[in-house]
Length: 463
Image 1: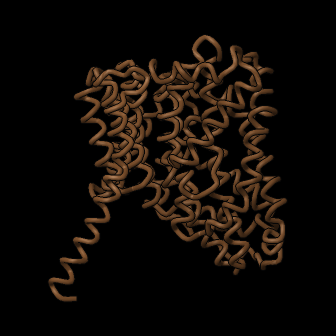
Image 2 (image 1 turned 180 degrees about the horizontal axis):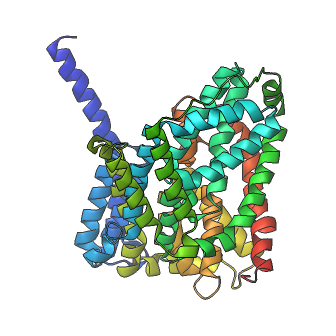
């Protein structure tokens, strides 16, 4: 292609991007002119900025980090909110925990211990698909305490499972189904503990403006989430039974012996084990999990398991996005925008917290999630409004968890759940596998909220 051809091609690309951007700006511009619900200028700017940013986040026309920076800047100028409130996330312990979770998880990945220790166990005990699914559950739960960063955790688990499946020559169709379950079911088990997904679950609490200990979260979520997990597993077996039978037919000899650990490996394993034990028993000794992970990361640097170059593992773009997402509810509240917008929606909800109220909450949360995609984006938009509407009617803990389950446990396409997206993006299973399971999952989420979670909350006296 000659110079003029390249220039023309570049102009075409830039023109296409500009056209898309102008289309996304139509609704925000209308908001500024119309000023719905009696919003003043500053409130209209807040709503227009939020609308434009959500469109940019969802469509990907502009890098998510740049869109987040734009929103934060506009909130500072027009949000009528103290800067310390807008940027309270970077100054929080949760922020520090997430940063060092990335670093600590990178150290575990560098050690290679997870793969070396677990693959022989799979060959020895995974004789049929039922045993394999149980092993997956054990690994998913145990690795929560070993690898705090949820994305690193699922990547390492998927590498272990992929090598094992390749080693037994598992047919592609069966491999796709099982790898999908590894990713999808990780989402379900992560709901049982705050530390199950440090990023998402802490985001939920931050957006809701609720402080909650690990033990309190477990009181509400641990038992019903395990029941949900097993019910979802039964649905998975029912839908993919033919694929799972292929696994049973594979030759699975215990042909992989565990390598003998070197002295350095033993030191690394000791560091990891010590951090896991102290972190898992936080409720007993009271030592903050953040301090434990920081100490573990520093020990890895001293042992040269981590190097300065490994600091690149910290996802700066995600941290900027989280800062922006967490600021939405606070700015909407401080500016008075939420009060004016959501007061008109109160008529849709019953006067008491009943079955209809819960169903409206579920449907609204699911519908927005299908459009927006990102869990955190959806929660940051829908949850503050629902909490405002339900003030004095519904227990904020219960409403928060209903919204959380409806959004985070439900996915139809890869972009609806980042953990599933990681597996799909790494070509471990196609989108068609997710879609095949989606109708079952949709029904299961709705039914479980009423029959499993709600029943459990009634039994514990929360409802």
